[in-house]
Amino acid sequence: MLKSTKSTLYERLGGEQTIAAVINEFYNRMIQDDRVNHHFIGVNMEALRRHQITYFMSFALGGPKRYEGSTLRQSHAGLNITSEEYEIAIKHLNSSLRKFNVQLEDIARVEAFLRSVKPHIIYK
Ligand code: HEM
Image (cartoon, rainbow, N blue to C red):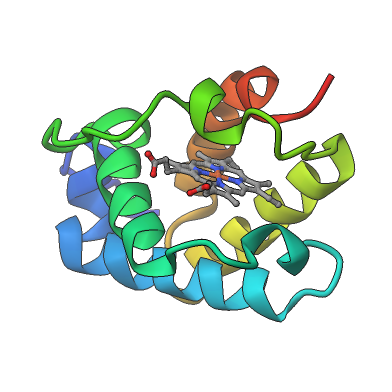
């Protein structure tokens, strides 16, 4: 297999435009999924997409550090997100990354990062 010479996940994914497309796909899937979409009622989705894009670039993918939103713990406090709902989000994100032909190895890296922040997001 041909090894990529691009060093950060951010570069390998194709930069901000691809990440924006992946995040849009991810939110479309979450919004269409009746098991989780009740969480997004009344939420400003445009702001959420923007913050998600900069969050992922800054912390998950090794891109430019531009995230200026709340901490994950603050922004999910009181939402009562369960472990099952979290797993659904991981599946939708994986499917979105696959749709944009991200390599399985890189998808596994993103998933590992997301699992490291799970305790900040789910309700205990
Ligand atoms: C998979 C890992 C996740 C990451 C990395 C993540 C990341 C974020 C980020 C960066 C924000 C924006 C914070 C801000 O605007 O300042 C946010 C907000 C939000 N997230 Fe997540 N999130 C995750 C999982 C989830 C899940 C599983 C749900 C629900 C099923 C969820 C529901 C929400 C909601 C409803 C908001 C908006 C809160 C508000 O504006 O009132 N998130 N998330």
